[in-house]
Image 1 (tube, helix red, strand yellow):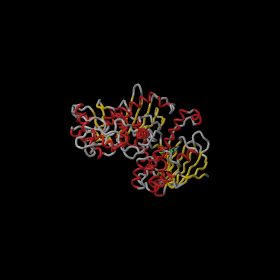
Image 2 (tube, rainbow, N blue to C red; image 1 turned 90 degrees about the horizontal axis):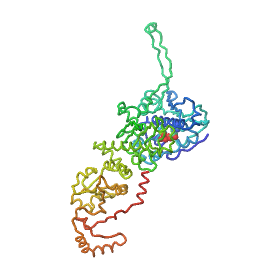
Image 3 (cartoon, rainbow, N blue to C red; image 1 turned 45 degrees about the horizontal axis):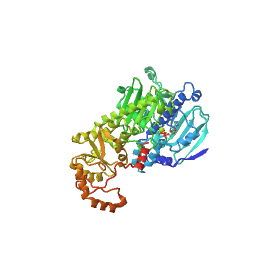
Image 4 (spheres, protein in one colour; image 1 turned 90 degrees about the vertical axis):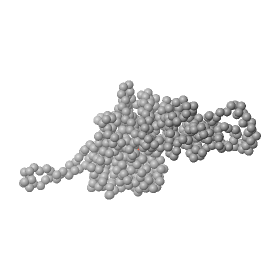
Length: 569
Ligand code: ADP
Ligand code: MG
């Protein structure tokens, strides 16, 4: 018998599961079924790509999930015939936290039970959620293609043990000993059917519920007259309880909003409805289906270099990968959903996906589709506010990364400006609309603090001339991307800290005259400030303040840039 300690973060998570998270317990079924489905996906893929594995599987192997419960035993069991886990897999997968998402979840925990249980909704904490309802869990698993099976057991406090066992077939059995107070709720056919219907209806494999039911014999009128007692028997049921059709294969007109939303929740682990759904079927030269979602709340790992990509790739309904960051451009990494191609070869290796033309094509059209959907969203002011609060930043990255779609993306970004108030924001379209006919540039100023920027002496002459200046206070990113935008519809972007002020009528001679007049004072200031400044100059940019500090045009902030690039993945 081998005892193992849980990794510290797992311990923390488990503690939280058992002590603080009481709301929404039902999600543990969703998580375990989703793991079962993933495990079948993996084996399906191997069966298609690995002849060796194919030879080891029964000819007619197809994936299925079985759920059973037993009130007297106080247990619930979830069985799959997927890839399975060997001893090393068990230790690595359920004993440590390998996933970046879960790590950031643990890091984000506040210790405040209420806040934390809201957090869990935004997060798939996966397998460990079972400890919300379990006293003890056994995971009995045999890896496909291997001989030895193992049993992992833990009561969810501190340690787990693993012993070798015998098991006929490949796959995993999750045997859950329910806490006394959870038996009534979860050892119930109605409750399980209801939960599966809600979260796992469109899992691509059949889910069967197995249970015993007391059946009372129907007596005929005659028998009743004779005073015969009806016989009571117990019958075993084996009932399919999900649709088992991939939702995205259904025609758009047939899918209800609620089904779209439920499917979103099942793939994203989010507990909220999505902000937008984008379902597309492409036919013709290239045939594929995409179903994309924009989450209401940005994924927690959006600004981590090791973020988990949100789009899964399928070929003819067969799962290929959920770990390809190239399926969409990085700035759209918040998008969740699936791509299902009819044209890619089924045995496409994950490595060659990168250079695949078919996929490049799907990617390009998907980006167009998503951007135009965001544009549609922008017509609804309230909804778009929500969107911008979450995704203005990735859009800014996009305007910088995606040259082909630059103007389209710039149009979607929202900006604070010298002419907006409170949390109102403007768009470049509006900016141009509001500018007078002589203006041909988009002026901006970048800094950390909105208030400081709004009071900058540099704005004075613009205000006087009623020229709008964009206030960019998300310095970390604005400073990197804005100077690279170049232009929007031929309107050049200009940083007011380094460009000439507009509309100042002054000849070269007049300029010289002023400079000479102030020569001795600028020299004096330069002497006093010494190394601290690069130069001291006379300027026509100020109208009320006597002086201001500006930075040199083109001062690239290399270190910060590198940091940002890393964050963008
Ligand atoms: P996630 O599914 O997001 O990776 P989980 O906590 O749900 O996180 O599961 C952790 C890991 O445990 C999975 O990635 C998988 O490797 C393994 N695992 C869990 N359940 C199963 C299962 N039924 N069959 C095979 N592997 C499983
Ligand atoms: Mg999981």
